[in-house]
Length: 113
Image 1 (cartoon, helix red, strand yellow):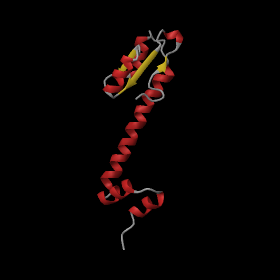
Image 2 (cartoon, rainbow, N blue to C red; image 1 turned 30 degrees about the vertical axis):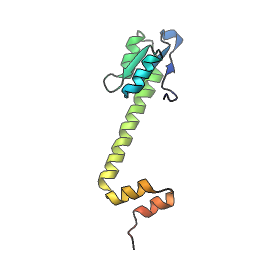
Image 3 (cartoon, rainbow, N blue to C red; image 1 turned 180 degrees about the vertical axis):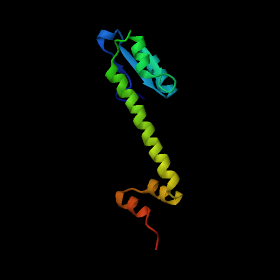
Image 4 (tube, helix red, strand yellow; image 1 turned 180 degrees about the horizontal axis):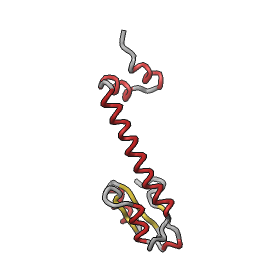
């Protein structure tokens, strides 16, 4: 499945029609199958550098930098989740995952009487 932004039209001046950056092999393969001109695994290669190299330094810097910022934000979010789950009792985490409303989540960290 492709999501919005998975295949971005390249800048016509760059000579690239589409590019695909990501970390999942299946999505990168889909990008290749759909004809992406540049496919970059952002775990192994800096997406900004790869697009710039492929376009002779004429690439869409804004799109590549947005992708890089998105990866950084994801990493920060993951670190936050890891920190929270390490310092929160498992019973509270399990309760929060089962909760169906904000009120149920609020009750998760209250001691049972």
